[in-house]
Length: 455
Ligand code: GDP
Ligand code: GDP
Image 1: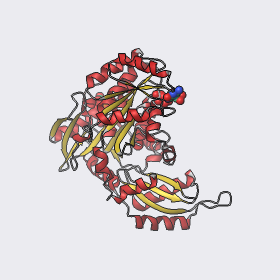
Image 2: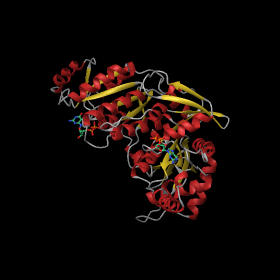
Image 3: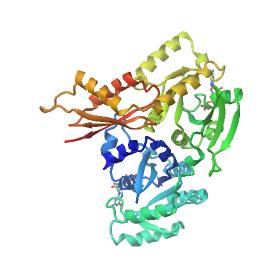
Image 4: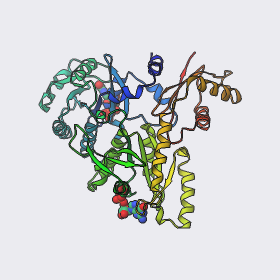
C-alpha cells in the first residue's frame, strides 16, 4: 500500500509539494516519558522500515506525513528535540512554545498514571495563551481502571481528557477523531507562504557566527520589507529582501536580530529556533565562523538541515580575519569534518566588509535548482541499469540482490525509491548515491534513497 501511495504522488503529476504545503500541522507536546514517541508511532502506523532505509539518517525526522480518516496532516514530533535532562521544566515549556508556533493544533500528552505535574501546568498556560486548538491526551490508560485517573485531568482546564493507551492502541482512534474536529483543512502556518512566492531562506548557525551581521549587510544594501507572519504575533518575523533582482524571504529574522537572553537552557532554545527556521525555509545558509575551529555545534546545525530535507549552502564568515596559517588549517578542517557535505556550495564571506556576499545568491539558486530537480523515470532506470551492470551488488549467502526498478518519488528534496530483489547493503547504497550525484549533480541538496525489497 505504501508503495502505491508513494508512486501515486508522482502519478498525480509530481505536485506533492503543493499538497504538502497546505497540509495542517499537528505538534505532539508533553513532558519526557509521557509517551509522545509511542503515540507518534501509533499514529504513523509504524514507518520504521522506511526511516531505517534512508542512508545517513541516524535519528528520526521531526516532521512526518500522517493521515487519519483520509485526511492528511503533518505530525511534528518534539520528542527528538530533547537534548539532555537538566532544566527539564523550562525546556519542556520552551519546546512547547516553538512547537505551538509551528502548529495548527496540538496533541498535549499527559501521563494519566502520574497525573498533572507543575511542568504540565506550565505548558497548559502557554497552550492557552497561544489560542491554538488543543486535544488533551491522557496516556497510559491501558485498561478500564485507568479511566478514573484520566478523568482527574479535567482539572487542567483543557476540556475533555481523552483516555488513550499509545502502547496498545486503546482509544487512539477516538482521540484522532477529536483532533480532526478541531484541525483546519489547510494550514495557516505555511499558509502565510503563498505558492510561487519568494523563496524562503533561513540563516542559521551557532551564536556569534555573524547571522545578524549578514542579515544587516544584505538588508542595508537592498530593499527590506518586514512581514509579520499571519496568525502569530510573537517572534517569527520574516524579512523580504531584494537580492540579485529577485525577492527572497528570510524567515524568522526576529530570532536573529533580537539577542536571546542568556538564561539557563538558552542553547537549547537556540537549537529549537534553528529547527523552527529550517522547517519554514526551503534553503538554509549555515554560517560557520572561519576564525575558529569548526565545532560540534556547527556540524549539528548542518545535520539538522540535512535531516529536515532542506537545500543547503555553507558560508564561511569572518574571512577578513584569516591569515595564511589559519586558512591552511581551515582547509584541513573542512576536508576532515565536512567530507559528508562536499556536495554543498560554499561561499567564503565577510559580513563585516561585504566580501563576496554577492556570491550568496548564485549559491542559493544552485542549491534550490537541485532541490527542485526531477529525473525522469526512464532516464533513472537506464542510469541504474548501467551502474549496476558495471558494479553489481556483492553476492551474499549465494544470492545477488538486484535493483528491479527505480523511481523518483518526490522533489524538494529529491527522494528516490528503489525496488530490489534482496537487501541492499548500506555501503552499496552510499555507492549508488555517490554515482547518482556524479551523474545528475544535485549540488546543494540532500537526497534520500529508500529501498523496498520485493521477494
Ligand atoms: P516520550 O519521551 O514522551 O516520547 O515517551 P516514550 O514514547 O518514549 O514512552 C516512554 C515510556 O512509556 C516507554 O517505556 C513507553 O513504552 C511507555 N509508554 C508509552 N505509552 C504507554 C502506554 O500507553 N501505556 C504504558 N503502559 N506505557 C506506555
Ligand atoms: P550572530 O550571533 O550569529 O547573529 O552573530 P553577530 O552578527 O551578532 O556577530 C557576532 C560578532 O562577530 C559581532 O561582534 C560581529 O561584529 C562579528 N562579526 C560578524 N561578522 C563578521 C565578519 O565577517 N568579520 C569580522 N571580523 N567580524 C564579524
